[in-house]
Image 1 (cartoon, rainbow, N blue to C red):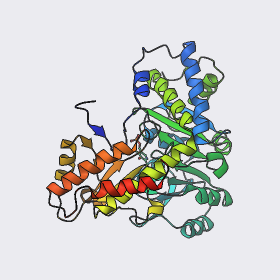
Image 2: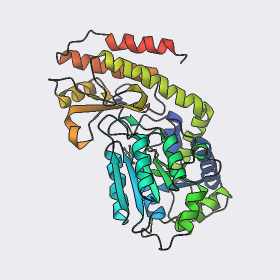
Image 3: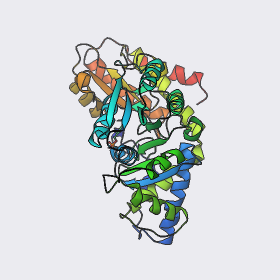
Length: 391
Ligand code: PMP
């Protein structure tokens, strides 16, 4: 589309045209038979994407932060001990939310560009009985990917619930909620799920639902209380009308469309596409003599890349120049290093062509600012990497 800028920030992302068309359909009643079907279908499709046939899905108007808030408000009571495993800005946010509900939180912060070791997590779990632990699957502030599988296993071993902030990973990174034993996997709609901002999405294990049912105190937050939402989710899944708060009808119609697109591609193919594109993109970035925040490719996210500006280049000017070439990227978020790095999202509908456009705009801007690289360097590297894959 001429005049349109390519949105390559880590959410909101570029959405599939069918999803945007679905969003623009005439709004129906939230209890119209067609909409009940759409809502019910969406809940069922979420179980497929999350790989959680036994989980309880929730679709609620709000953002990813509401999904975090819901997990904390419903599962944590005043004085409960919670271990927060942090790889950046969003780990700190989870601690803030939990503290607000009176949790007794301990935060394990990874050194910048790294993950918290399993040894350290186990040592902490051995040391104290935690009710729950939280993990950020992909911290969008650093582009660090954490493997949640062994952490969920440790949580089970030490009888703690595992809560995964998967806002920047669901439908982009590998997740097998039931098989891995994750108790809550939560996200927002605007990332790899591929729907404009406005939906908080969670899938909750049977064990976590039981913990919630056996609370001693009532849930402190009225809007987040699963007592209000569970009957609504159950009713829609049984294809019955229900009401607590008016659902965002159009967003849920768009969600069903996107979940169908995701399932049609297949989760393993989709994850593979993200992995191949991310690896090739990182190779392109490195060929431009740029350093990623993630200290190794093994812990680099497949949904976004965060890299430092080269020395002597002003970040704001670089981003502006890239925008002049019709590509929108994001600046830094983690306060300690905010002005020293930038972030590029590559999730959801992302294609090799999108990333070629990003590398081209980035290279041009860097060359104009005097960075010592060869024109086409990153494009060749990206292409070489792609040719090694079967994408
Ligand atoms: N967690 C992570 C990992 C995120 O990337 C974000 C959004 N960038 C959030 C939580 C918060 O989501 P929202 O902005 O939709 O409230």
